[in-house]
Amino acid sequence: MLFIIVTVIIIITLILIPGFTLSIKDKQGNKVPGSIASLEKVIIGEKEQWILIRGADITKPILLFLHGGPGSSEMFLLRKYTQELEKHFLVVTWDQRGAGKSFEAINPHASITINQFVLDTGELTKLLCDRFNQKKIFLVGHSWGSAIGVLSVQKFPDLFYAYIGIGQIVNMYDNERVSYEWTLAQATKAKDEQAIKTLTKIGSPPYTGDWLKKLITQRGLLGKFGGELYGSKKGAMPLILKSLIFATEYSLIDKVNFFRGIFASNKLLWQQLLTIDLTKQATIFKMPIYFVLGRHDYEVPSILAEPYFNIIEAPHKELVWFENSAHFANIEEKEKFSDLLINSLLLASISA
Image (cartoon, rainbow, N blue to C red; front, top):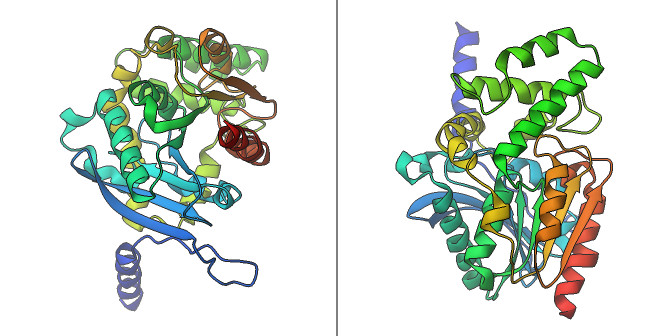
């Protein structure tokens, strides 16, 4: 009986503990003067959504990350891999409506449209510019966030210094076809009869019937063959789970909502996402464009992003291959990513 009581108390305590972020400190353990470490709720698109703002100097340029998915919040993951960037930028990570800490903003479901996410991005950008007295920001989009990112800089060009696409989406129909074909080819090469059987059974996309189950199955096998996290046979999930479990920014309920957000958001947005073709929607830009592509990325196949990059018109554009990465290039080669943003993108923007 005592064990049950203690267990219940522990569970209730864990549920009641709110998320928090640690302050930015110097080598002596003192809070850095002029720094910011704020986990806060803001109103975007008339819904409460959560952002994390961290930076050693509040006067530095703003760097806003758009996470992948749909619904795959990355606040807790990026928190571990942006510490060097916090010295040079105000790093803002945002849980979009329906994701992670912003899960409740998934209602009403009618508001969950690609266009709404673009409008939310513009509104959040304006909010950040006004708050920190800046005219523009840098925008980073990863995977699903890269589609929203491109459409956002197209719609609000005057709000952005530059756009950085990681795992850049181009045409989602082609994306899924190439991803499936690569996974089947790897299974065949490895003589993995079970994987071949499973992939043959679900068939080539676009999936019908229980399409979400088929998508998850294909992604699991993709991870097994290193197309999600280079060199990993388990994909990115172990990395994500480890970061999620120890994330102070997420309460226990937030951690549960992380998974709820992925499933609910995909159900509402995946079919919309399949209509994306940026070669027809966005090829001319008014700001510098950077593509960060993992050479081994077959979740959002990087081989599709290079031809798109070649037809883009922009004041400046760079495609940077990350040779030892797949879908999470900014994490798999974090030093190279930080160096690119600090010593290339930031310096170029200051001198422009």
